[in-house]
Length: 133
Image (cartoon, rainbow, N blue to C red):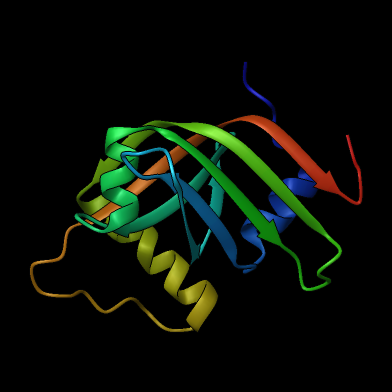
């Protein structure tokens, strides 16, 4: 069942706040990394490079959790979901450029041989603090 993102969630996800992305290793152990985050069309967006651990984990097991924390550490949302789409090519590259400009204030610099991957995660459960509906 899909859990809709609220305006409050979107403000956190698109506001230049960092997030922790949790994926699962083969044995079910969690793997957490700090990452840039975004949202569009009801999905949480995460961009990575093909072959990185989070990419390998999500390709094998599409379950993920993303916790995004606002500037005030007592304002956060934890979103559990499943990968709905995995995109490479120009769309993923344009997305990482958008994120680079948002987080670093500079255009993204392509890395030779690197393939960017955009993951769209469909939210299924959202916990918000302070508690919001």
